[in-house]
Structures are given as C-alpha cells and as structure tokens.
Length: 212
Image (tube, rainbow, N blue to C red; front, side, top):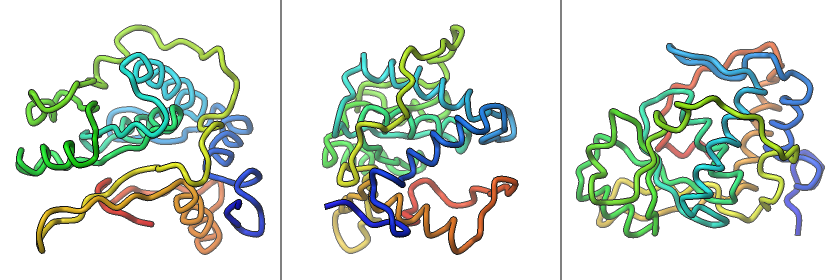
C-alpha cells in the first residue's frame, strides 16, 4: 500500500519529487552552502549523479549499505543523494567513535564501502573499501545523460538509512528508517514550520542523530 502524506500517495508526493521540483523550478538558486562552498540546485543534482556513477562502479546498488564518515559540510548532503540515487542506504559513522565500535557497525550493517574525506580516512584503514569524496571531483563535473529524477526507482519501503544506538545497555543496535518515514518527517516540518522557498535552515544536529 502507498504511504499517505498530506492526503497524497507516495507516487505523487515524496522527498525526491520535492527535490526534483526545486531543480526544475529554481536551478540557479543556492540549495546548500557551508563555510567553504555553495551549490545551486542544478549543481547539487549534477554532482550527486556524478558521485552515484563512482559508487555504481564500486558496487553500490539497491539495498547496499554504505558507511559515511565525513566532516560536517555540503559533501554530506551530496553523498546521501548519490547513495539514494542507487537505491542504497547510508550508515552514519562518528569519526570520534573508537575503532572497535566502527568495526562493529560495519560488520553488523554489512557495509563494505565507506565514504570518507581527508580528515576521517585514518579510522577506516583495513576496515572497508574507501572512497574519498575529496578525490571524486578532481576532474571536471559532467552533465548526466539521464533526466530522470534522483531516486526515481526508490520505493517508500526501501531503506534510507540505519542509525545505531549508543550501546550503553549492551551492543549497539541498528534501527532501519525507510523513505516513507523520511518523507513523512519532511512534509510535517514543511507544514508545521510553514517553510517557504525564501527561508534558510541551519543544520545544527549530528548526522548520526535520528530526527525522524
């Protein structure tokens, strides 16, 4: 059955459709920025597609679990879109966590690939196949041949991400969140916060915190 979101079905109203609509209507508007760079909606779309091509070659496909350990930056959002484009799910990993916890999370989730940057690579030596996002865009970014929306093949019941608990009462446990949950959260925030296209939203929480 289709998830009901604001009275509409998943096929009519989900977070991928919202993003695609923004790319179509506001291609040159800034979508996201950090202290060092900014991307328009079109640039974010193209870079996500480019990174998805890299991940596809590395073996990421539908339901693949991909560990992500990056410093807080625009690269986080870019990475999530690329993983979701292939139907995979991400596993946020805290770079400050002990190596033993990181190994446990990778083994339990089945993540054999980790996306890292120059500052987080050291913790993952010998633990997974590494893709350094800082090296993925050294060449010119190319336009994707596909015009389909990002995530067009993803269903509401596909996994979006897996959050691991702190493990204070035993071993950490992975909690799966599907795309239907993500869409419900996004639509509720838009509704209750009366978010408009002119608004700016700060990302304050850790990517390892489950806001849904």
